[in-house]
Image 1 (spheres, one colour):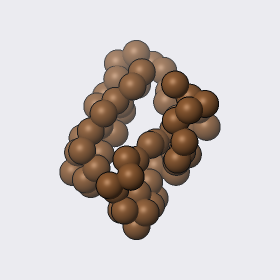
Image 2 (cartoon, rainbow, N blue to C red; image 1 turned 90 degrees about the vertical axis):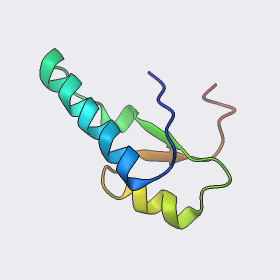
Image 3 (tube, rainbow, N blue to C red; image 1 turned 60 degrees about the vertical axis):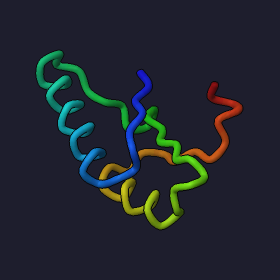
Length: 67
């Protein structure tokens, strides 16, 4: 599943809420070790780290090997 959102705390929180709801309904879990976050070059490193500190997903910088 690919999700695209604007890089801000409120929108990330909403995505995480919907993922939790999906997990509750489907009785499945999000695999944190398999989940990746990519930020465009216009997102500062500080903001990327700030958004990621809440969920500890892996941040990737190069999409070539993923797409």
